[in-house]
Amino acid sequence: MPGSRQRPYLKPSIYIIILVSLVSIFLVGVYVYPPRTSLLCYIFSSGCINGAFEQHLPVASRELTDEETAARVVMKEILKRPLAHSKNPKIAFMFLTPGSLPFEKLWHKFFDGHDDRFSVYVHASREKVPRVSPHFVGRDIRSEKVAWGEISMVDAEKRLLANALLDPDNQYFVLISETCVPLHDFEYIYNYLMFTNVSYIDCFVDPGPHGSGRYSERMLPEIEKKDFRKGSQWFSMKRQHAIIVMADSLYYTKFKRYCKRTNDGPNCYADEHYFPTLFHMIDPGGIANWSVTHVDWSEGKWHPKSYRNQDVTYELLRNITSLDESVHITSTAPRVMILRPCLWNGVKRPCHLFARKFYPETLGRLLHLFSNYTAV
Image (cartoon, rainbow, N blue to C red; front, side):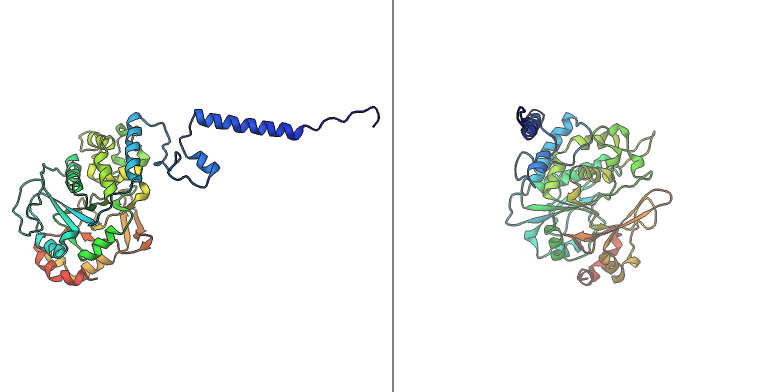
């Protein structure tokens, strides 16, 4: 209109300036205060490959101590580095015994013909006993006294792992007791363990007095009660996890100091809690949460059921080898049974490769049945 002037339309320019300013402030903030998680990966990309924003260990809900930060850096590096390729990958069978190996003849039959695919290590805590089988002769390592329920049990397990790790061809590590027997032939067990991507470390939450009730607040801040786990000590673990056990001193020290039998509080048994808690905290997706070694706790006693000579039948062994669900029983009142399917690389399969506790008197019957029940 005559005598009037149109007002310039500046809104789009202003919005652009504001947007650019906000983005600039955000990027400067990220540079000055780097995020602790992979936020930029989420914003700018569907994933990061070998970059500064790679996946971290489980994010802590609190500020880590210097010792925790250092431990997590080491453990993260171990987990992300591919293992050196072995032309002859082997399983290390680590026998933890007071002295004798009553099933040495059975294990000899199990090992025979597979010399280049296994190693044997024996920790005899009370006495050195002459071995009969050539697979066991000269395989005793330096040993120390072991007391039931004490940290010395974990120390013996670590001693076995350390000796077995000296052989770079050992890729999988199985802890075996003197009362333990194989449930399958060597080929089956070798393939079951070597072609999986997890460690078979037993791990579950027991909210009762013999689970979380054993937790001590003196383990804080590194170990919180919500992370405290329980499980059988009879593990089968891959090499990366065995190296982590060797590298850990922080969490081990907590269990050494505060998980033990006491006169003024609940008893705590490190061999039932250290490995489950450690791997739940640092690599929960890397463990199966059950043990491939079967034990029968159905009697509800302090120790699992032991098998006498009359108990050992083809039907018993067939039933154990057919179990395809892991069983955990809480110490709550009333007790709760937790059943979970045993998944091998995502496929439901029988859970157990070994079983315990068998009395020495069962050796003859087991030798007689071995070829039949291991073929199940």
